[in-house]
Structure formats: structure tokens, C-alpha cells
Length: 254
Image (cartoon, rainbow, N blue to C red; front, side):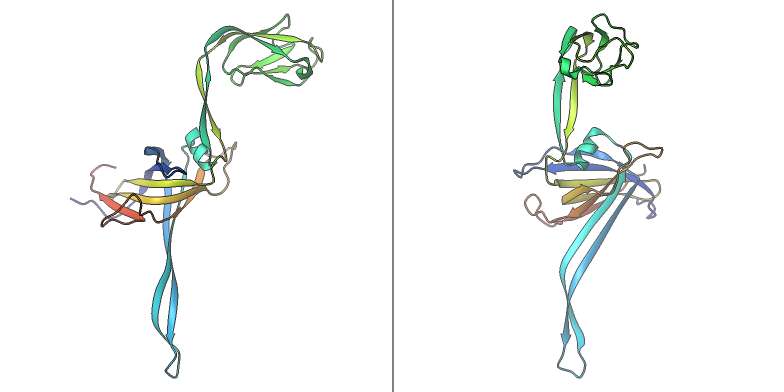
């Protein structure tokens, strides 16, 4: 039995990326959203009958149809950033090791300089006979060493950094601006608290980030996107649309 036709609530977003060689990636979860809008506009060509005393409109012809969607999500992950910044995910493997030695170029040694060890989440950092907290500070998470002003490390000194343990990790990096557009199939599954839910399948859509994203601030940050719906006759046929299908999901649960 159908539920109420009153709709409130958010939804889940899914995306199947289309690559430059026309292949598609597997369907992936894009994120959850509390706000999504869809708009459709039609441009008309009007014809007037000019044989009478007055020019009268006698026909209108649709010359173009345009559907766009706008949505935002506060579920910010590396995958979301990657899609917003038109990037590609690169994985860098960090191998587990103990007693790792890093020799620093003397030209990089200067008060206030930051030395990148090249390892993240390493533990047990020592530098020759110098004292951590007095001569240098160590940011284990980023793998950075800062030479402290007033400490015993002189500019241009030759330093040998010893890391007790380096954990095995897969470091995932979004290499931004590697593509020109984010194209593919976009699916919205709604989660209404009152009425029936719907599944919107946009067959071919170009999605880009829309607006600003607060990297750091007191408010909850959201990523906003805008998508332009395009025709796709290569993967869909029959009685369904080449643009978007809207399926009613009869469900008793949100």
C-alpha cells in the first residue's frame, strides 16, 4: 500500500563514473545529503500568423530542454574531495620498518625550518645527541621535525634522524585537477520520514563543485555540487528515458 504523498527527508547519493575511454567504474557510494533540488527548463521558439490584421501566436516549438540538480553533503571524505576537485586517487605504500635512518642535507638545517622525514605516524624519534622539546620538535602524524630557536642545533649542521618504528600504511592522496569533468550515472535514493521514497536515476550527468568549502571554521562544512543532465543513448534503450528515470519505492520504512 502506498504511503503518504507528503515528502520530507534527505537521501543517499550514488555515482558510476564514466571514463574518457567510455568505460565505467563500478557503482560507488557518493555521500548522504539533507538537501537536493532538481529543476527543468524549456526554451521555446514561437511562431506568429502574420496574415491577419494582427500578428497572432499560433504555434510554440520546444527548442531545448535542460535539467539540473543541486545538492550538498556534510559527509566529507577523501573520495568526496577527489570528485569535487576533479582528481584521481593515488595510493602510496609505506612499508613497516624499524630503526629507520634519515640523513638530512645540511642546507635544510636552519632555525625554524621544517624537515620532512618522509614517513607518517612513525614513533621514537631521536636526532644524534640532541633533545626533543629543547632542540627540536617532532610531529609524528605528519612526519615533520622543526628546529627550535635557542636550541643546540646550529644552522648547516649535519643531522641523522633515527625513527624507532614506521608502521605499514596505505597513504591515499587525491591528485586534484587531473580530469576536466566528472561524468557518469548519478543515482539518488530518498529517505522520507513520511511519504513514499523515490529512486532518481540520471543516466548521464556532468557534476562539478558549486560554491566555497570552508576548510577550517566553526560551522559544519558542506560540499555543494551542481549537475547538468545530458542525454545518453549508449547504455539505455527501450521505453525508459535517455535522461532520467524516477522510480517509486513502496516502503514502510524510512
